[in-house]
Image (cartoon, rainbow, N blue to C red; front, side):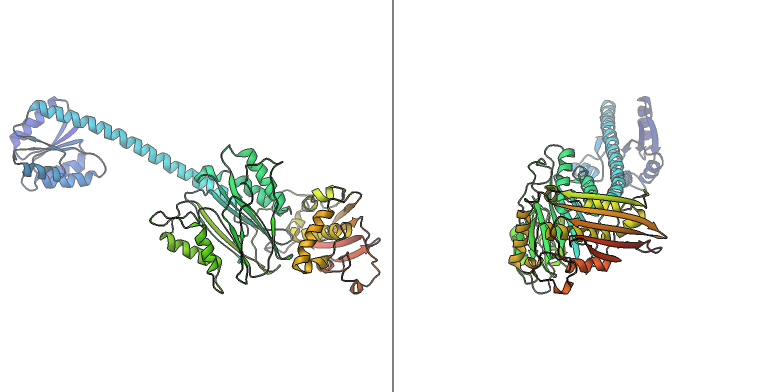
Amino acid sequence: MNLLIAEDSDGDRMILATLLRRLGHHVYEASDGLKAVSVFVKFEPDIVLMDALMPTMSGMEAARRIKTLAGTRFVPVIFITALASEREQAQCLEAGGDDFLLKPYSRVILEAKINAYSRMLNLQRSVMQQRDQIRMQNEQMLADQRLARRVFDNVAHTGCLDAPNIRYHASPLSIFNGDVLFAAERPGGGTLIFMGDFTGHGLPAAIGAMPIAEVFYGMTAKGFGATDLLTEINQKLCNILPVGMFCCGALLEADGKQGTIGVWNGGLPDGWLVRKSGERLAIPSLHLPLGVQSLERFDATMELLTSAPGDYVVLMTDGFPESCDAHGKRLGEDLVRQVLAELGPGDHPFDVLLARLQAFTGHPDPADDMTLCCLEVVAQGAIKEVTESAPESALSGPGSWHCVYEVRDQALADFNPLPLLLHICMEVPGLRRRSGEVFTLLSELYSNALEHGVLKLSSEWKKSAEGFSLYYEERMRRLYDTHGHYIRFTLDHEPLAEAGRLRIRCEDSGQGFDPKVNTTSVPKNSVHEYSGRGMGILKRLAKEVSICGSGNCVEIVYDWEFPAQGATNR
């Protein structure tokens, strides 16, 4: 061991140094406290043997400076002194001394104390090495998690969460968040928001978020509906999550065109629909969390609510009502209900709820992963700037092709062909940036063919609250009787110079109507509404629209061009 002897008596210092060297130690010498500090800085000895009373700088002052210089390193300081009073010996210990020997000292006791402190030093070095190893492993783990987080964020991107009608706050407890929040615009219009809360925290809780993000953004871009997304997400989580791990979640589908809000809540706290009039409607959890039930038992039925521009929908994870104040008292769902009840004219639910949370907890740091999201219902087309960060596939596709696809009998009730048809169209590279318009054309054609052509439903029913419910009840009832009916799509695409032309022909097995009749003279209670809003949308988007056959067939010509260089995707 390396030992430092600070002793102003040359004789005593020489005797002590000789003794320690015979015991096999390397010895540094200093004749006063100031030199002892200087030697300590230069050679960093393991143990210091210090006389209490020395010229220039006392041993007590030197001990204080050495302890300060040593920092977290344990350097035993043993005072060897002739001070006999208990008060003076206590002052030695208060100055930083760890032990003392009274002069004249015993050689045997001195050797025993040095050996004892040598064992303590070895133990302390072992602890420090383990600490440094744990620190390095923790730093490496954090670096790996930050790298994984970058990859994760690229997959589970924010979608359209930055839209002006969406406000959200997400507070992760660690680098990875057990809460997830995704939002995307549907190709034909409307917004989908998914909020999830996995069991646990950190990386283990976030592992399930990546497959959910892939399913959510991938299926939304292809035009799948909310029930299809929920079914696929549940099945995916059932396949990959271990027993005991699941995801409490809620899916919100806002359709400004239809004026409806569809909500599915499985295990999250009550969501809220706050109408512009001040009326509040709770959206409780009616389902088990995702990843728990098998495909046969899973219920993806959405709760359908009417909505109007100016209404708000509030969703939150359990971290919000379970936030605690300084005394450990929870905020609770009752206080959430009270805050919403006290909203004044012009108050935004998101701002008021977040302000109340921070006032209640007194600090911004959450005790759990916490996410709060508020969607303001807006009219269709009111949001113009929406950034789509989902990358486009680099694969090329065909430019000239012909496709006929027919859905018939029970498949009309059980299967939605729009994602498949949109997927076929999106194989044309330049057409991918027109997915919204193409989906709208396909959706309007299919909806009109199914609801008015095959099911003979009248749009007039949807013009009142009572008729709205009757329309969808009747739709569900008539879907059980589609035997013998069909809807046939015929798609043709041909390339043009810097553009392309897509022909879509949609024919149904319904009775149709007389196309020679002036559209303005079609009775309002006509079961066929091609002459109404749907026809207006088709004429606005397509170059040509024509009604064929007995009025049960519509053919459109859709011309498209490559977007100008630098144009953003809308």
